[in-house]
Length: 186
View 1 (cartoon, helix red, strand yellow):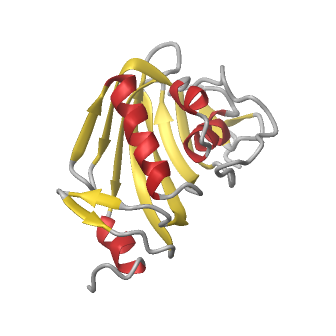
View 2 (cartoon, one colour):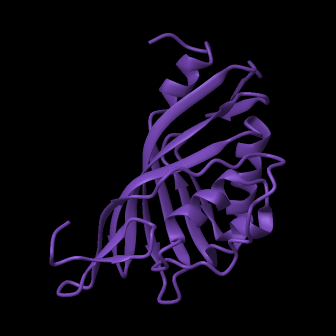
View 3 (tube, one colour):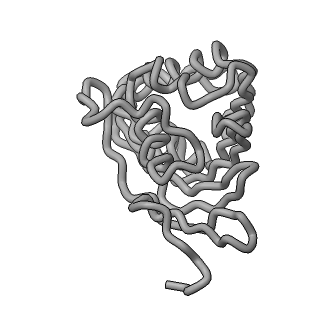
């Protein structure tokens, strides 16, 4: 390990004291899905904590709306670039979260590498699950296929001084999901 970096806990986050920034690291794997009993309550974990990466993945991978909402400000902006949709505020962002779970109740979001500073972070992730519900994109309703999918993406997020996420923008290729589900051919 670089001698100029100090490790914060076991989360794989490294701090450069000269730059006061968080460096790229591996978050480990988070595997929680619908009906999974969480081994702990992740509420109260904020960006900057050594446990944030695992906790943030757990919030996206659970069906726990209160847990999910606890990571965001009330006026959060969530943008799903693949569907070209934006959701302003926690209520709209929760509506997106519920629709994601209606499409794929066993959704798992696994954050791998990320980099950031006190203003926010960028993180690589993998979203996987089963298409157990319909998917609506651009007014087109795609049927339930009960097929598995997995897609990689990147999240760009900003945070407030308290460590709550103020914006989260996901970038990924929805065509990969549709192809894996047998709904389109590339």
